[in-house]
Length: 262
Image (tube, rainbow, N blue to C red; front, top):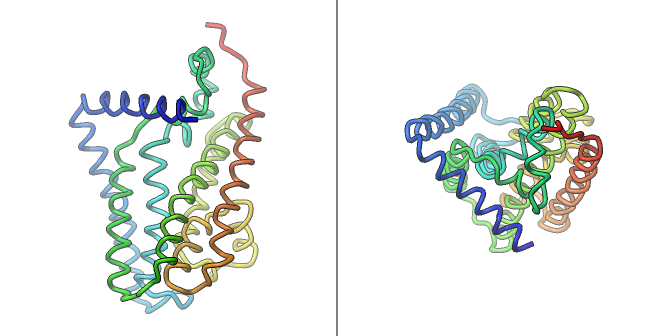
């Protein structure tokens, strides 16, 4: 395990050095990440300029939900984009050949093969939004609530990665990237209170596509809208479930993969 972590950090370090060679591209991608998230936040504030609440949730409560989604998206995009979005593409283009000849787990190589600095900007922006939202809400959470919130955020990153890798792997069987695009479009539901959606959507957000575990549950725990136990335990349960789904789909992909022969 420690060897895999070491190799992941080494791969990531090489990618960072490569990207830093093109400073203008680095600046553009970073600024683009900031602009993209700013547009979403502007829309959120514009929405609440006309209404006072959504499903009983105020502006800064929804902003906290939004920030949780931004955080997981940013971390996955920054540190694991090669696995989260490029799995099917690498299979179709035969790039898996060079991964398979190395004496390292393929997933470790995928996780460290691509870095995107726009994700880093997204993560930093999300933390700033969280701090401002908590300050404006004037909440006084207990130490347990804060610890469980932070742990839920970190576990949510793993859940998000599992969902993205599974969806990207499915693209190999469907012949395109439509599966990943479809799954990613459902992540927008996590930016708003789950209670405003129909029962079917709520069921999906807590089961098959547990985006609610990434944003809704952590936010409710921090704000005291839900008791810490047993809701906190549902977060790692979702991570375990999505890990199994990701490994199952990725395993099926590897069995179907055929080398290009080059």
